[in-house]
Image 1: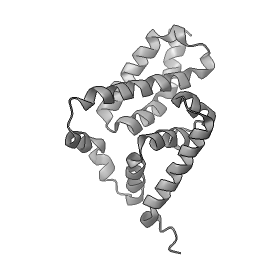
Image 2: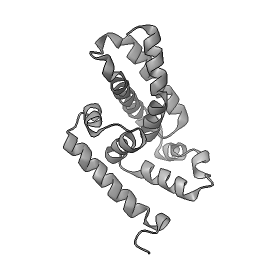
Image 3: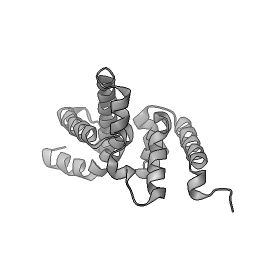
Length: 166
């Protein structure tokens, strides 16, 4: 893959990268840093990409590793309160559509092992097989996590969408 093809593919993946970084890190500044570092890392490791058809999956895996690395580095330097204050930017908390902000907050409050597959599948449209490859877990495990995340969200959003009150 040449430099121009790399740039084209990165631009195609940019929106997905942001959603995934956001679901792991929570704030825009960290997302931008993680994305930039992942792109630089991917470019320097381009020779390790075995099949160009899997470029986006490969890039997302690099991004996820970068996000987790940033979390590990921050744990030693950021207090819990500071982290929680930065978790949800004001523009999300002040959304006019209460249902949308409630859904966003509840998705972000899912445990990471449920949140990441949920975002990859329902927001980014990755298949169960692709998610299994990215997260290095079985397809059955991905299906189980998706099922559990849906059930958790259904319970947590019961009051917002009036489930069972008809």
